[in-house]
Length: 441
Image (cartoon, rainbow, N blue to C red; front, side, top):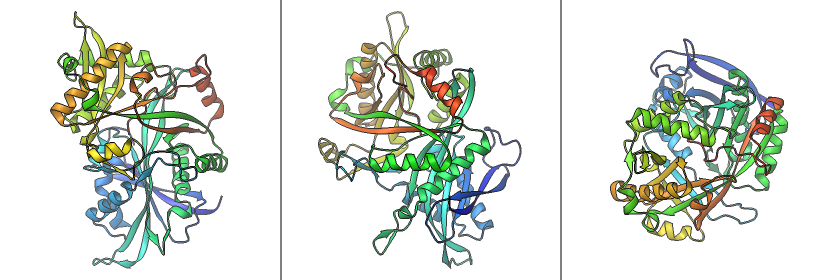
C-alpha cells in the first residue's frame, strides 16, 4: 500500500483480560503496518487502554517525548473538539455542524466502555522542552470500543469493535491542514485493521456522518486496500425540545429501578427479546449490560433506569435515561433551518438520551414525555436526543423538525461468517437492522 510505520501497543503485562487494574504494569509490543498516508515526517503511533490514558506521561517520557500529562490532555481536547460536520460540502445538504467538548477525560469515557482502546498519532517536532524532551503535536485520535455481540448462526458471543471519536487535527500551515490532507484517517484505519488481526475480531463498525460522494469513495478505497467487506446502514437523529414535549402527569408515575436487581434484569431480558435478533446488539448478556450500567451510574449519578408501572406494578415501559450533559457540552456552529432556533435558545449544554426503551408504543411515548419533564425540571436538561432506523417500532414517536440523517457502516474480515450473520437478521422487507438504537460511545 505504501510506507511502513510502527505502532506501540500497550497492554496489561499479565493475562491481558478486560478486568485489569489501570495502575498495573503494562507491556509494550511493536507492530509494523503498511500505511498510505502522504505525510513525510515521522509519527509516533500508540494504542493504549482508555483507563491508562492518565498514564501517558510515563509512556511519553520513555520515548523521549514531552512527558507532561497536562500538555498531553490539552492536545487531546484540542483535537477531539474539532467541529463535526453533518453538511455535505459538495451538495450543500444538511443543517448542522457541531462541536463536542468532553468533560473529565478519560474517566468519563472509560465509565461507559472500560474495554476501549485509544489510538494516538503524534507528530514529533524539532524543538525540545525544558527537560530536553521532544515536543510534539497530536495529529490523530480515535477510540476502539470493544462490545460483544451474539453470532446468531452459531450462538457464540463474539467481540466487535466500535470505532468512535475518529478525529484528525485541523492544524494548518500556510492555509493548508497538513494532517487532514495527508491521509491520516487511512493510517488510523491501518491500525484498526491490525488490531482486528491481533485480537481475533471480525466486525468493526462506526458512524461515518452524512452520506456523500467522498464517504462512498473512502469506503470503497479502504475496503479494497485492507481486503475487507463492508455494508452501510441509514440512521436518523432527532432532537426534541423538552419544554414542548414534556408531561408532568407521566413524570409523576415514573419509578427509578436502578437499584432493583430483579427489575434491572427484567429490563435487560426484555431488551434481548426486542433487540436480540439485530445485527450487533451491544449487550447480549446480562453481565455485559450490568458492567456498563454500573460504570455509567458510578460516573453520572443522574443517569438511571426508569420504569412506567402498570396498575399491578408490572413494567409497562422502561428506558435507560442517560444525561449526556454529565459527559459533554455541545455547540452548534452555523446552523441551518430550525437548528438556528435551538442555537439561539442556548440550551444544548445538556441533552437527555432515553435509550434501550421497551414496552408498547403508547406506553413508551408516555415514558419519554415523563422523562423529558423529570430531567428538565430536576436536572435542567432542555433537549432529548432520539435515533431511529428502518424497522424501529418507535420511529414515529421520535420524529421532529430537528432531523439529522447519517450513515453507520460495518467492515469485516471473514466474509462467509459475516454474510451468514446478516442473512440471519434480514427482515421480510429485506432490511437488516444493525442496532435498532445506536450504540453507546
